[in-house]
Image (cartoon, rainbow, N blue to C red; front, side, top):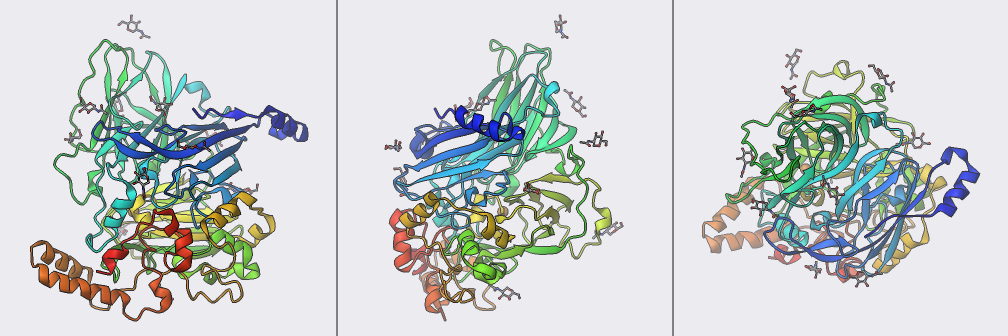
Length: 629
Ligand SMILES: *[C@@H]1O[C@H](CO)[C@@H](O)[C@H](O)[C@H]1NC(C)=O
Ligand SMILES: *[C@@H]1O[C@H](CO)[C@@H](O)[C@H](O)[C@H]1NC(C)=O
Ligand SMILES: *[C@@H]1O[C@H](CO)[C@@H](O)[C@H](O)[C@H]1NC(C)=O
Ligand SMILES: *[C@@H]1O[C@H](CO)[C@@H](O)[C@H](O)[C@H]1NC(C)=O
Ligand SMILES: *[C@@H]1O[C@H](CO)[C@@H](O)[C@H](O)[C@H]1NC(C)=O
Ligand SMILES: *[C@@H]1O[C@H](CO)[C@@H](O)[C@H](O)[C@H]1NC(C)=O
Ligand SMILES: *[C@@H]1O[C@H](CO)[C@@H](O)[C@H](O)[C@H]1NC(C)=O
Ligand SMILES: *[C@@H]1O[C@H](CO)[C@@H](O)[C@H](O)[C@H]1NC(C)=O
Ligand SMILES: *[C@@H]1O[C@H](CO)[C@@H](O)[C@H](O)[C@H]1NC(C)=O
Ligand SMILES: *[C@@H]1O[C@H](CO)[C@@H](O)[C@H](O)[C@H]1NC(C)=O
Ligand SMILES: *[C@@H]1O[C@H](CO)[C@@H](O)[C@H](O)[C@H]1NC(C)=O
Ligand SMILES: [Cu+2]
């Protein structure tokens, strides 16, 4: 068990130095990340990533104002890892944010790494791996920041943490190499095998009549959004993603991957029991396997001797609309933006025949040098986005700017977008199929005076969203879809916020650089590792080549179907054809893309570097073999 150890001597030291820190503690967790066996849906034992021999992994808990210290040992043996503390601003500690190749090097097997940061925000968060699409294999758990001064403290008697998630029977490396391959040209995401409630099924939640409970819910799944309801009970929402809200009544909520919501439930004067239901949003699934139970049931249990009834079937999902929430602090609409970033979400195929996700014309590929280390080692050139490489899709933000992000969905899927290092005001969200924001007649006049804030928001099919935040937190922050498949297929951009302030203020501890050395990852220079001419990006990691003009995704689908329908010879010829398109006109640098896109956040995977950095770990998710036909 990883119970926190509180170091009182240090607390006393802090008390002596500043009374404003009264009560602040240092809360330490020792985590040995290693393989265990789990079977939460009762259908199959599978290797799962646990902590200290356990899965589900521990809930991290601290109070507002505490310093959290998470000491990680990578005991996996065959995969590197890292931890992201989702929703925490990491103000002054961007190097503790967790994404591999962005703010740190992946922690290789056998290495240790310490995350140390102050927690200034109350609420419901979670932590998960931010390396190689790894968290769905088990490395995901709740993170709760208790607030002794919560405005709702008189409204409830007890609090309960409750997660929803989705579960696969196969491990991510294998699923990913199929997902991003020419055998899957439409980019159909693997469908989960089960839904889970608190990483199990048939969960009993004992309630006592007359008491009110604060439920802290988080969707810690890989892919599926879930509809959640409690028969016979309404919820009073008081927090989303760490932002307190004016209480709002709901009968059903929707939590996309990575979203959180806390709400009050008042126990009835009852002796019978009530189903809790979470139902995966099957709109997200390209295929709906006949044998899939996409619902998971638990019970509010008033009396164990009474039966646990089956849930009533419902015919329409009508979840609470989070855009109607009002933050408790009444923070008003941020002013006119100083910088507007407009991103179109596009799914398309590249020359290797696989399907990728793009913001505008760029699919994310991790740089050779983690972006933070580029920012720290490029002097005044750090304000020039070029040094971060084209495929990290960098945007440099100036300190204090009001930044507006417009995301247009040129795709019929839902995408939950997440920003690291901040939450954002959700100033506009269109209905489905509204087209682009620019083409609509919506203006800032229709933005709410007090917009809802959160850190993860659902963009609707072929719709658009407009978000605003203030660049008051120097750091390197990713903006990405939180569907783990889309992270890996490239739906990610990098915000480089006030890099010169980082150079002046940040000190990266030696164990972070030791992880780089152990993995053979360079820590200086531009995205390509050049230290002399910082604007020379030759040799940067790149995605597979584009398809030649006129060669459409539909063509690829047709090819694959022709293969499936048995015209094998023809298809094989076509296949070799592809491989050629993919390599046609490639400069030596482009050849390095092979294997890179199988997983993001991975160092270059060809040449000497890759052997040391990725190949050596044995967890390269590569479709290289297939690409070569
Ligand atoms: C939960 O109960 C259902 C129905 O009895 C059963 O099919 C399922 O296997 C149970 N799940 C687990 C993990 O025991
Ligand atoms: C971590 O766990 C693994 C697997 O249980 C074990 O072999 C290893 O000794 C542990 N390492 C440390 C540092 O506790
Ligand atoms: C869910 O699991 C966590 C432990 O992982 C536990 O602390 C919590 O009480 C459980 N929630 C409910 C509602 O049973
Ligand atoms: C829940 O709210 C709905 C709509 O406001 C209301 O009709 C219903 O009676 C409420 N149910 C309970 C159990 O309070
Ligand atoms: C709960 O129900 C019982 C039996 O119907 C009743 O005696 C009791 O007064 C009720 N309690 C409350 C708090 O309503
Ligand atoms: C899941 O629950 C929904 C809502 O009640 C219902 O319509 C659907 O039939 C259920 N699906 C399965 C596979 O049980
Ligand atoms: C927010 O506004 C409401 C009125 O709409 C007011 O009652 C409340 O006190 C305000 N909250 C804060 C934190 O200022
Ligand atoms: C994307 O478009 C911009 C603007 O047209 C262009 O400068 C850039 O080279 C393009 N990048 C890629 C990777 O195609
Ligand atoms: C434009 O505005 C009108 C009137 O407010 C509204 O009815 C219409 O739906 C809007 N069109 C779009 C594309 O938003
Ligand atoms: C970060 O800290 C600075 C200085 O205390 C503060 O001005 C800023 O609002 C903070 N930003 C966030 C996102 O918490
Ligand atoms: C790593 O080891 C685990 C546990 O033995 C195994 O299940 C998994 O497939 C291995 N992963 C890779 C990528 O080799
Ligand atoms: Cu997505």
